[in-house]
Image (tube, rainbow, N blue to C red):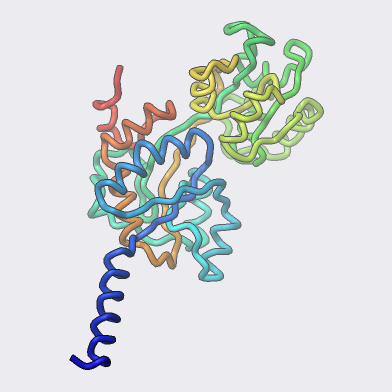
Length: 300
């Protein structure tokens, strides 16, 4: 056996080992904190165990970042957890890959939760929450009008760092009936926001922010994701929430156009759309699943 032949065999063995050792990876961008923790434990780890595909979770998606990645061709996020307004903007901008609906039991989902470019994960709601050391449960603000009433309920507030949802909250505080909100009177909403601005200590940018803010008592009350507060309460943080005047939002999975991991990303979306997966995640984060059949697997 010649030396040249031995070198060829050695090179071939290295290539085989390298190929066998390679692992497909998908990167999922979502909203951090216990939400990402729930995604990893109830969906990410089971998905990797079932498929061998590694999942990396990162945080804080934004429309600007998604558009920049697609335009540059430098895709950092294969899958993005998009709130409904972010999803609608992404569809308009043409930055998503079509989903393979043949891999999804579309009829199992709530109406409007599945589209050509996205598959619903869960519904969450922003609620009014407050520190129970400041006001005992049942004694705090119960409506948007209360949240704006700085005389009855003095103290620093936290509000979303976006017009989306905040404009609706402001109009509810100004007396607009829920069934008359749309089309939004933007000027009226901003006037109402101006009233509250002196009492807003911090604008939050992600659900994880709200947990930090309320845990560290940077704000006494605010307009925040309810499921995040439920997790805090379970951890012993003195916080409670009110169901009145909540604003409900749908989260959808979408794939950025140009991802080199489309097949693996679609497998992840299909896996996370199964009723048992959505049920497990819903129980972890206290949000409502988009798959109607998931409710059969949620403990009553």
